[in-house]
Length: 149
Image (cartoon, rainbow, N blue to C red; front, side, top):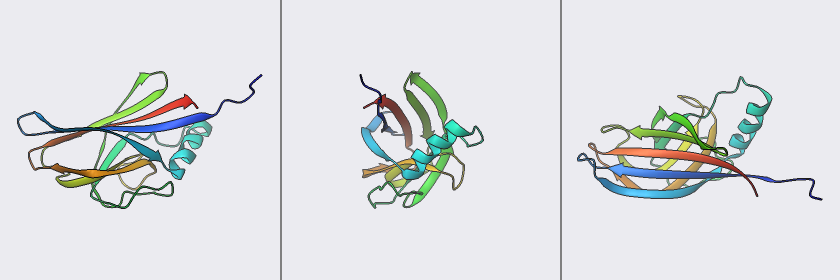
């Protein structure tokens, strides 16, 4: 008889870059790391409701590879509060679309946090450049899925 069931948390990010005409220029699905402070935050949420939910998405231009010890993005350029949903029983989703004129440049990283500034970095990933022009929008869908491993 099995007496324990390990829990695995997977972070997945969908990036969709659209040009000024609304056409998709780039679409990517990437896996990210869950940070040490992110795992601690999950325990804190189970223990005390006073800990803020992670409903902010940040993008940046940092290029250093993500590590479990990360607490910030390498070079954050924009952050905003996204919309939270639960698309299935085991997935927590936060979505935000950075509008034209916000977070422009050579975007190479994103993360999910629990505050408008500073806060707890739940997860982070670094990826090949997504060039966000001044007229482009960038939608970031940031999921955490909790499943038995």
